[in-house]
Figure: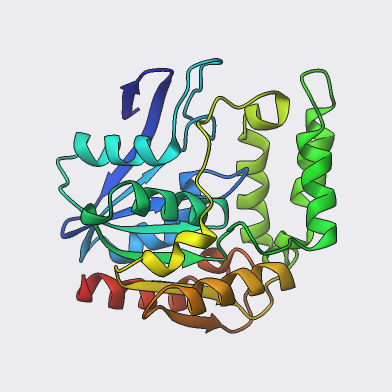
Length: 261
C-alpha cells in the first residue's frame, strides 16, 4: 500500500499514467476512489495522483499534530518529484485545491474546481443542518447514524439515481474514519478564500452540475465571477458529484485543461 510518512500521518496515495502531473483532491466523507473514472480515462495524457486526505479513507491522522491539507498535497508532489501540477478538487476538495494554489501559486499550472466550497456564500439550510448533525456526533455518538444522515443529504440525491454510483458513495462513506466528526481537528487555521479570489492568476475552470443545490451553485458563480479569466462550465443532468455522475463530460473537460497546461 503506497503511503507517504509525514508528521502525524501515513498519507495514502495512488499514481497512474504518464504526462502532465495532475493532483486529484476528494470531497468530505469520501476518498481517492471517487476519481476512478478520471484515472482510467486520462492516464494516457497525465500522471494522476489521488490521495486520501489526512484523516480520510486510508490515511491516518494523529491527534494533536498540527497540519494543513495543502502542505500535505505539496509534500506528496515533492515525493513524486513534481515541480508543479494541475490541481483538481471537488466540494471540500475544491476548497483544499484553492488553499493548495494559494500555498504555492508558482507550482500550480491550472486549477479545476467542481462544486467547490468557499467562505462568504451561505450554505443551504438543509446542508447546514446536516453538517451540524454530523459534526455534533462527538466521540460517544452514533457514528453509523451520522454517516446515514450524511449519505442521505441533498448533495447526493442526484448521484443516488444511479445504483452503481450510490453503492460506491455508500462504500466510501462507510469506510470514512470520521475523525473530524468525532472531535477537534488540529488543522491549522484556514485562510478566508473569498477575499483572495481576485488575486488568482492561474487558468481556472469551475464545473457545476445543473442539478446542484442552490448554495453550491452560488459558490460556483462567485468563483467564476471573482477569479480573473475563470470559465464556468455547467454539466447537464448532474448534481454535486459531477465527476461520478457525468464522467465522460468531466473527462473531456479535464483532457482540454491538461492539453492546455
